[in-house]
Length: 640
Image 1 (cartoon, one colour):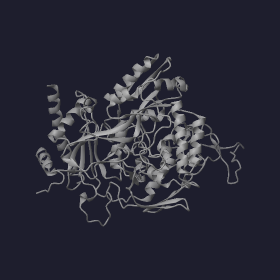
Image 2 (cartoon, one colour):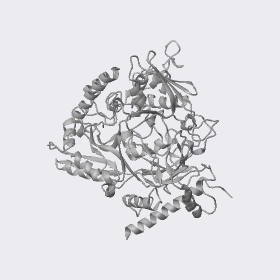
Image 3 (cartoon, helix red, strand yellow):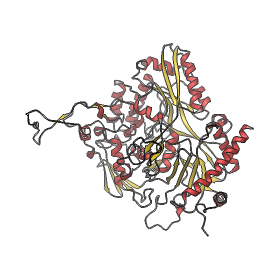
Image 4 (tube, helix red, strand yellow):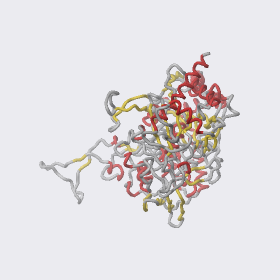
């Protein structure tokens, strides 16, 4: 009876969702004819900045609907043009020239320019920027030097030749062009609209009014309190200014509509189960998250694909307990990855950090650890000490955490479980500063606690979807190094003002004849000028290994693809012996859809594309919506 009542409640919510979305979209910005498909893409998204999330596959899959990098990579490893129209490799000059496809930002009128890519990439490579995705660009001329404070940002080997042409220059001797181009399929290397990002770096990806995107969809509704989320077709996506093609020539659906569970009386797994029941009722057409209770039963009907991430427990090696590699190995050895895979249902026992979706040199779907991890528990040394395991508060993460806690406590450790959810707060929509909910400019946002802990190191053991970043193992392995991890330089480490000098380098004195000083600037970081007292940030695990750093430096210096791949395998072997992280599952994405929609596709990252999604007889669903909102016609209907 309880399930029937809950189902009726949710079906009512979905009907209400259709009314809400229909009434709030048309007056502001019509999207033209086409299906408005009710879907469940996943739980609440806290930040849609493509450079802002490295811990959640679900968040990144939604971000990919809004932002488009230069390329995509197909499941078989093939490189496909996306934002790029064509490219040319000039091996003699060590350059790649990329001509851009004509496309526009989501405002419909502003051209996406080559300079937008330059701005986005420099934002990643900037010496004060802390982002592991920067490792994707380290083969670009001067990128690593800039990140380490040894070169000016303006000398990055990426330039906008004109509005439509991007030129990339590589380090001397570089030859792995095909491998690098696949790096450019990561959504973190999408262009950014400088006008929207500047002065809003901390929150521009969190509100409808500040998000500007270049992908097939644009954000039109994001209401955390009501639980409503809507993506409309980006009408200017891949559309030339003189195009006369129909609106659905490049993006078929007019809109994707989601409603999140905001009813505290309904457990999220129950909500998801009832959404899945709604597939048969045609009240929802796609469900991108399957609850644990239904995963085994839905194996045959779900679309399941491998991804470019590994569900992983990270050790904070700054914790004295985890400074000892023997302790980390023992905690890893105690876990049975096959049992964890049985808990998750979708996912494969991890035999290393890097899944087979990462390429082996030029061969797709081929990476295998030289010395694979055991997928079953092995004899583990007893120990003592206490620590906290932090993870996202969902049923599967909870079940895995409870299993790990039991295994670790059997060795003698005391383990506290800390499930966390995103935290709600209000900010000023102009400044991003905290604001009272009653303020005129106040807007509701969510802060991703897992991402924040990953960035700040505020954890003992942290569960995340560890991203591979690319089909190239160089990117992910670099994130474990001491100085090539993408974290850049710590401005806070500059504790001493800088002497002021004249053009000849002589000290500038005050009226009393004493030297004068100034506060350090960003230029001091990016150029390493007159400022020896800076600190390179460590990696997110605070892991330090001279042997690993040396191997990765050798891999970076090696330009031959096969020789570099061999060095990367040796580096992974060192990493797995030291175990600063515990790889648990090679992640898989699973979704359910009904027969009313078709045309979905999945890329190498496991991200689902709705660009070509078709819905049968979509007009009849407009009729349902129109009846619910008689005051005004639904999107795509003709007005009388």
